[in-house]
Length: 160
Image 1 (cartoon, helix red, strand yellow):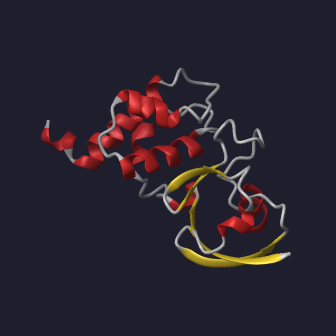
Image 2 (cartoon, one colour):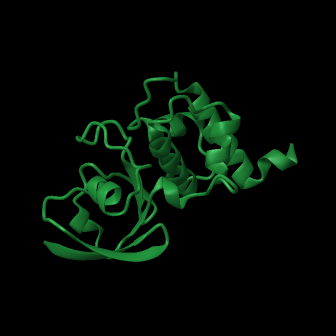
Image 3 (cartoon, one colour):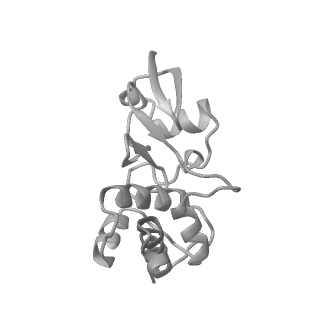
């Protein structure tokens, strides 16, 4: 077992993990953050996406010990029911949420994209989201939600 210290959703935390424990298990079991979904276990579906220092990563293939000294943001750390993050609100407003299983990963991937590229093209959005699988939608409303969030976050919507 090794003790790791990191920032989780803005709060300094520490815990003991085994050398083979993956971050998704640490988040779900040790911290009770079930918004990070455990699905494929191979890094292929994106349901376990979290932000590591602002970059979207697959927590099912990321060793928890590697989080030591870093900042992790889960879906629980971006907005609330009373005050949703602009990306979360755009997903609701654009009708981009169906069963919701993939939504946390989609939202976090979108946040990471918009932090790096505030005005992405449709093609850039599709590339950024290509590692996040959704079985319910045709992806169009998800792309529209990211475009809407980009407009709102850049202030372009109020200029129209």
